[in-house]
Image 1: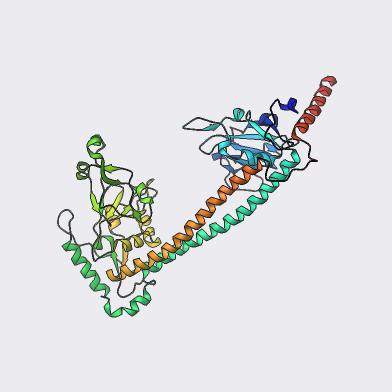
Image 2: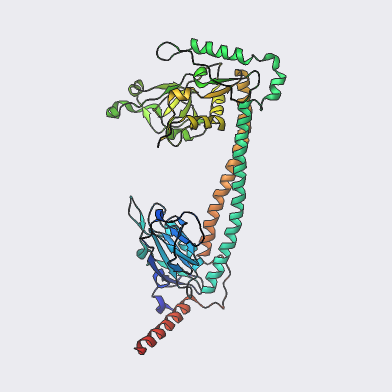
Amino acid sequence: MMGVTGIGTSALPEGWIRTPLNLLLAHNSGNSKLIKGKQSPVRQVGLFPGFSASGQDVWCQSYAHEGRAIIISAVGARCGKCFRAEGKWSAIANTHIIWPDEGIIDRDFLWYKVNDENFWIRGGSAQPFVKVKDTFKKKFSLPPLNEQQRIAEKIETLFAELDAGEASLQKVQTLLTQYRQSILKAAVTGKLTADWRTKNKNKLESGHDLLKRILKARRQNWTGRGKYKEPAPPDTSNLPKLPKSWIWASVGQICQVITGTTPSKQNNNQYYGGTIPFLKPTDLNQGANISEAREFLTDLGAQHARVVPRGTVLVTGIGATTGKTGISQFSNAAFNQQIHAIPPEPNIVLSHFLYLAIIETGFQNQIWENASATTLPIINKSNFEKLLLPIPSFFEQQVISSEVESALSALSYYEKLCQHTLTRSTALRQSILKEAFAGRLVAQDPNDEPASELLERIRAESGQKSKKKKGAK
């Protein structure tokens, strides 16, 4: 047995052998002349499957190969990802093809082993690639062929069960997301507090009086530059009806909007490295409450920035995350020019209610509809101030905030539970593969031909064929 590969077989299950992969397969590069962008992204009659570095995602005029093989994503951030091919197909640029000798190694068994980005030896930094030849020199634990097939079938069965469970969890996640939006919509349309308003109808001011009080308070509390300018009344003719005690108001009518700035980096030592948080859009990925920052300003740096108090609502105004929103929990925080800030307005608009109204789908749609249609979406301050919000009394805002917080807290529990279960499912897949390639997933059969004898027999048969060919000459 040792003479077959020259590699020891200690610590292996009975009948297994250690051998380099390059003895078990052939391999070649995909067709570099077939460019992904020139292939059809849509399946059509007469076209054949094409494999790119992303998988089977194109269709080709003709096929270059036929049979069972494994396609490797050979170049790019996900290099080492593998895909199964069978029938008639082509492999295009940035791929590599593995042709397993299925008289020795089962294609599906091999795929489960190599479809792991960490299995492959890589090179490159800016543009990583797999070192196929170096990887195929690695030692590989080879079971008897029949056992390989049993292992592959067992993995397939177990993974199918996990797939079904994950699909169910993903459906639940979708329903939870829809439920979250339903809660938010009910909150900002008055449906959530309809019964509460009925019980407290004699205590609520009219929408007209509410707006008058808000505008008066805005004039009195004005701290912006120059003389206060009364915001133009918004056009509410095409908007949904609100409860009588609610109003539609523009952001500029009820709130002061401040857009941030960035202190000069030329004075890095003087302006940066202090204790005052300097917030950027990436800091708004923490959910409702922003309590962590990646960068900080000195007191001098803060003098060259815009600083807002705790409770300020922050909204991203540029880029792919436009509309991302959070509430600052810092006593004081600065922020850059990609963020619009709405400082708290005591007894007018509760910060948490404002946050809920902004993240609700209706307002988010307003943001994107009014963002400039450029490569990089932007909603500037003046356009942001024109967006419309449904505003109830401050008292009702408090009730809404409390009820939504309670509902979303329960919802978050189930969202985290789903995510935790999905994470466990991913870990279980890895455990299954680990057990499989250690020989512990399926029972062994003493009647299986040992891998070493199989290799020896295949080579002997191959040698006999080679001698016959030479004799024929």
